[in-house]
Image (cartoon, rainbow, N blue to C red; front, side, top):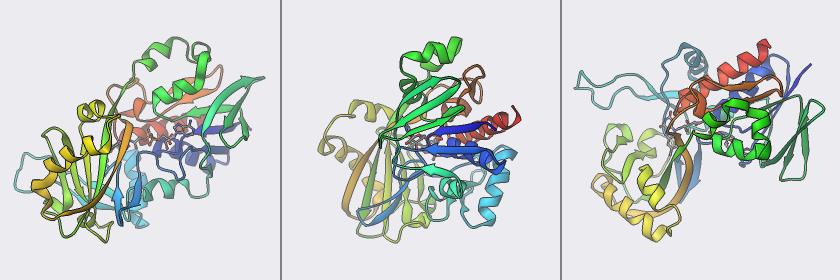
Length: 320
Ligand SMILES: Cc1cc2nc3c(=O)[nH]c(=O)nc-3n(C[C@H](O)[C@H](O)[C@H](O)COP(=O)(O)OP(=O)(O)OC[C@H]3O[C@@H](n4cnc5c(N)ncnc54)[C@H](O)[C@@H]3O)c2cc1C
């Protein structure tokens, strides 16, 4: 029976692996990070607990709703809010879901029982005699008949090295055109409650901020812990600036909403926050070399898009 190697343990890669695993296939996931989840990341910093990448997810498709219902039933996910403007009939009302103790609860639960190797950065791929070999930074070689790349598309293309033309054929140009917006995340601890309304969820439409989230009001941090996200222009401009230059203007812009003094902060760079365009199909597949690519660069620029890409790619591989 075919074997599968999945590169990347974000939600798309994990859903593919889960579907294959549950159907009895041999599948292994290689993830360069210390934990799984990719951009669905929760971490402790400065004595607070923060969702520092994705903040919540929405569900419009029944296939993701089925998974979400299971997470809700098991207490892994819960609803955060439905609308930020309850008095405005024109505002879009639909559930925004979060992980019970942070957004990374969701990928962790998908990974249960799956053969997942963390701290395993794939750095070279070879295909010989109908077999893929993936070399990871720990000196191990992993082999399988099928390879599934779910890293952000530019990173996945780098991995394919100088063989892209052989593996991607005429899709190469379309794949190379997929670019991602950057973002800076600042994680700040306050000495008292924040003034962020709406249960701690505040989209900000004024540069350089896009988002302020209060992780205490959200229910995942014991201390007042704020996540700030910059817009793409600020992140691009200050990608290599020292924190002392790029962070204070973000904190100043947030100050009117904070309500308390900032005790400490740390800054994280997201090089591939959101795809600015997508492939136009939920996944890429080349049957001649058994290569599949999936993720939000295919399914759409949010958790739901990435998840649906994973579900569609996983089901496709099972039916082959
Ligand atoms: C700041 C920010 C805010 C966001 N806010 C929201 C939000 O509120 N709601 C929403 O729906 N979406 C949000 N998103 C987008 C959402 O997080 C992503 O669309 C989704 O998580 C992408 O999942 P994925 O599986 O496609 O990719 P990823 O989550 O990026 O997973 C890819 C994985 O591949 C791994 N990888 C890469 N290269 C290698 C390698 N060489 N070897 C091994 N592993 C490798 C990475 O470490 C990563 O874990 C946000 C993203 C960011 C960054």
